[in-house]
Image 1 (cartoon, rainbow, N blue to C red):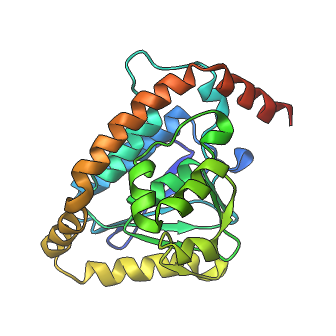
Image 2 (image 1 turned 90 degrees about the horizontal axis):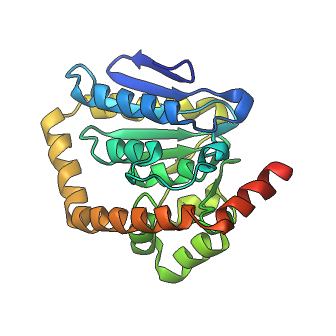
Image 3 (image 1 turned 90 degrees about the vertical axis):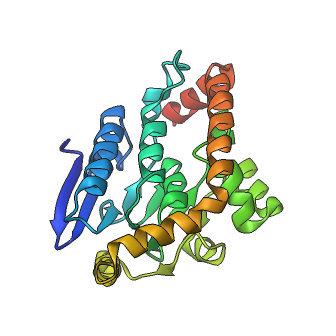
Length: 247
């Protein structure tokens, strides 16, 4: 695996760590590819029962490395972060996220596709699509209104402001708020409890829990990708990225 994506084993859990501390765990295309490969590998491995995603102390991920958006839209509409979300979305085994500190952009989007999410009290989330001149992606435009209602979803997406772990827990994005020193232990404890159960039963439960919205989410992702590609060609995005780097 990439040195910025570290895969370890904790009994029957495959632990995938985002590790690029010098850039606050901002994702590069290579990191997305490594994450996708790690998830698919764990999902295909019969000795793995649960997938655990985590970052470093104080930082899950700061989102996309914005330098990668400066190339404009993709002719084939294929982006590494979309392929990563697709791998996560189709994972058949339980996925647990342990979120410490900042979890921005893709860091928040990916949580909609995890089965369990634990976060530290200082965790901060955001969906900054509009701030960057972009549009929602990763199924967010469908999942979030159904999770918290239209008005609250509009607030989080249209204003694009950061929100804390307390709000994330209230809206159902986070299962529990955990002290930093106990965060990974909590995720691994849940992984161990899940490993005691029937693998096929868990697989069936996950399929049934997601089946009702699977077609709608798939359709939403396709529409989002069309608009994302369109927005990426707009001058709004270039100006937003320039403002970011000037800071």
